[in-house]
Amino acid sequence: GKTMLATALGHKAVEAGYRVYYTTAADLVARTAKAALEGRWANTMRFWNGPQLLIVDELGYLPMPAEAASHFFQVVSRRYEHGSIVLTTNRHIADWGTIFDDTTVAAAILDRLLHHATVLSINGDSYRMRAHRDAIATLRGAITGGEFSWWGIHFRPPRLVGCRGDGGQAAPDGRRGLPAQLARAAGLVP
Image (cartoon, rainbow, N blue to C red; front, side, top):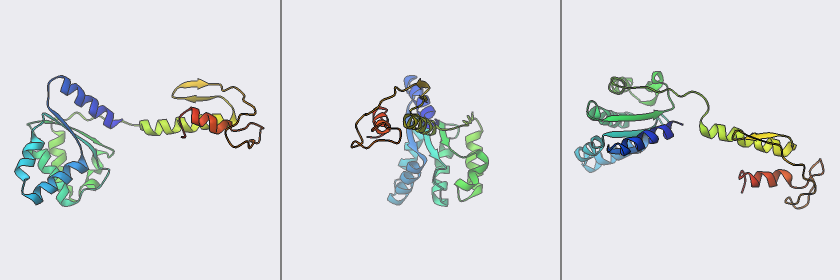
């Protein structure tokens, strides 16, 4: 989903000769907070301003207290007009006031980010949710013995009777161990 697109853009930028750095929003604010405590603020700001493309992943998964929001603002502000930022978030722009303790800081960050931005909005299930839904469909088909699809491939499993794998206990329809065996074969369980 979002992270895959951001890292793919990062790879393309590296191939084109740009300096790229990837981090999560939580790691960025943790590193800036540590630098502030250790008296390395100026060096850390130079570090975040160094790459031509900075990828900040997962903004908004955790709320940012005022100090962390201020640190994030400082990074965005220093990079404004000097370097590109790819940012991923699961929050709509209108909800950014809930990410940051201070809506004024949120507005200032958005002002700098959106000035030259291209915003991509991705709707629908994540890849993980699609994979989960497909795994459930696979198991459901395996348990019922009916047809099922997995990752877009349609299966019509053979009728196996007397199959071992569950300690010899029979399923209600007389099959032995078929659901567990199919789940293991599909890599869904160890």
